[in-house]
Amino acid sequence: MAKTNSGTRASGARVSGVRGKIKRAIAGAAPSLAQALGGPLAGAAVAQLSKAIFGAPDGDEELLSEMLAQASPQHLIALKKADQEFEVALREASLEGRRIDAGDRANARQRQITMSDWTPSALGALIILGFFAVLGVMVARKMPPGAETEFSIMLGALATMTAAVVNYFFGSSSGSKEKTRLMALPLLTRAAGEEKVAAEKRNDRSGGG
Image: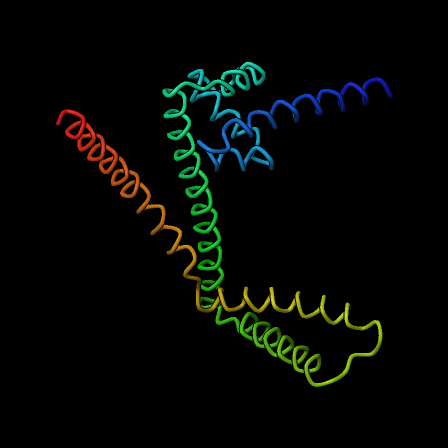
C-alpha cells in the first residue's frame, strides 16, 4: 500500500513538472491555456494544446513539452488560435451555466405565480431585513470581544442570500454582458487579423520602395 502511494505521488510530481514546463513555454503565446494549466482545467488545456500541435487531443505530454520549448512560427500561430478557441469554449460554458440558472429562477417564479405562493416573498423580505439588521448592529454597537467573527460570518451569509433574492425577483445583467462579449469576440479577432494583413502590406510597400 505504501509503495502504491509512493508511486502515485511520484507520477503526480512528474506530470506536474511536465505541465510546469509546458506552462512556461506557452505563457506568452497562449496566456489563457497557460493559466488553465495551474487549475482544475489542466487536462482540458493539455488536450487543446496537443490538438493544436499534433492534431489529436491525446498526445504524449513530455513530447508536447519538448515541441513547445522549441516552437516554430507555425506552432506559435496554432497556439494563438487554440488559445482563442479555449477562451470561447470557457465563455460558452459560463454562458450555458448562467442560462440554466436563469431557467431555474424563471421556473420558480412561474410556480409562485401559478400557485399564488407568498412563501418566496416572505422569505426574501426576512432575508433582506436580517441583512440590514445585522449590518446596523455591527455599525452602531461595539461588538463583544470574540463576537466579531460570528457576526461577520452571519453578515456574509446574509449578503449572499440577499444577492440571490435580488436576482430571483429582478434578474441579473451579468448573463447579458457575457453574451455580448461572446458575440463580440469573433468581430474583434477578425478586425485584428485584418489590421495585421494591412500592416504586412504596408511593410511590403515600404520594402519595395
